[in-house]
Image (cartoon, rainbow, N blue to C red; front, top):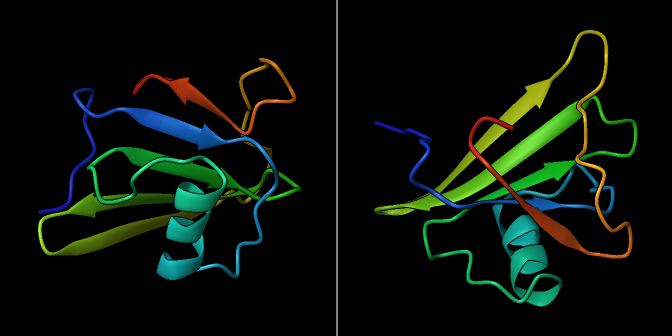
Length: 94
């Protein structure tokens, strides 16, 4: 069973992400841009330029899980923090 919960750490990748990226491309961003280990069980969130699509990458026992959400209308809200930072940590509720 695939689950996300409040006990995991959540990292939002701040620059706009090309939604054509899959498991390898997104895990490469985690390693090369964020300097984090994508196999550690943390949750990594990626949003496109228009902020209407989101991908969530997480490693679970045996492999990656990739969640993909497309909003019919509206946009995802990105926390307003230091715009020069490549990522920000967020909580499960955010």
